[in-house]
Length: 589
Image (cartoon, rainbow, N blue to C red; front, side, top):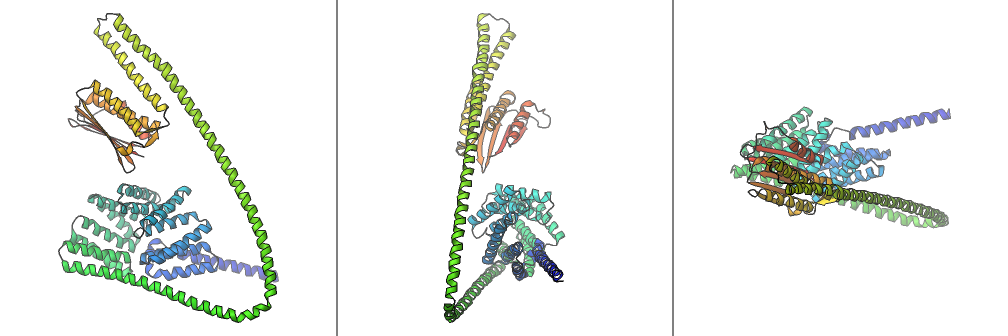
């Protein structure tokens, strides 16, 4: 009977514990849009949830509650509490080794700090991004890529921002993340507004708000109303902008979305100012500043409350000290027992210290073995590279000594034939000259190949010298053509592999040769520029051009395109009759 009772008691306790965990998880896993919509009243619920999880020893549920508490305080505009609970959540995730949730928490911390401390915002965002990418956590990257794009946009790095917005959108569309897709669409549309591409921005805003209406996402709908206001503000249509900001303000006031309330008042003031309605502009700006002041008072009050808590704590500590003084007399009688306990504690501490020292010694030994292994691996890699380099040198010497000598012999033989015999046949003379010229060209190609083989890494400065040498030869062959070659100084020391450099050089060579053969130009311009982390190469001529729709692309054009695509670049060709031809190459470094 006793065993049966114990079994039933344990079964009941396990069931009760599982039920409590399920209740904690149910609140934490509330849909994101619901958390945002009800953020004004959810702080107490999540705080209680964290306490309940702590009582039953459910650390993951406690950490999730802190993360949700941080989110609602951010939406309420209570940034000190937002950051405090975010740190608590991250600390617990690290102890639990919950990498995916830790990556998501760091990413959100970075996003939420963007207007207060950009340096720290980038630090936390990049930390979350690195954890997610290294471990293949796709879920955190849904928000991290999008939010990282926001930071890049705030730094006016619009190409980088657009790159991360599109990267995040691709993942969201792949898994049909209906909640996240509108955020990416709105951010991409924002870049189009900055670039004055209004016809591209509006369809994205329309698609985003349609999804949010379908989800009944009140915060998202309110946010999208402000985006429409921004669109019309950018197009200098203040009346339409005011309509959208008023719609946003109405919903923001209803649901207490503090950031959106402030923003709507601010933008209403600016648009009334552009309509020269000074009264309404001033009224809205006054509400904007008053609302900011009210938020400041809330923060001040919360700090006062914190000081009061500290004061009460100090009073309790004084009371405890007084009680300890009263108990001191009684403790004298137990001193001998405490001495024994202290002795045992010191004995245990000694053994713990010895154990720690042995553990530390073993750890150092393991680290030393690991370093020795890494050193051996590095030496083996260096030896392999040296062997590869020796093989390269052997092959290049063979090419130079054997193939080069044979080609030189062919040129010499052709020249001897021409001088030894009085060749009256013009076609034969022309054919011999063609063989000689082709062989000389082959020797130049061979030297370029040997140069690439002997180089582990090539800089743009090396490439520049090769291109200038090629252009000098082209000038001597075509004296009536003006060549212009420009390259950014920032690119001079940029390094890349020999294959990478050879593909660029061959593509440039083919593009210039095509212009010389077929375009009949008087000017050829080659421009190499660095834009952010991308290299742009342009080859333009003012020749006869051709019709892109009717021309048959030969092997030369196909080879150029394949060369650039093989190194991860983008190849573009554009031509119009009588307007010349332009070859564009974009390569991400």
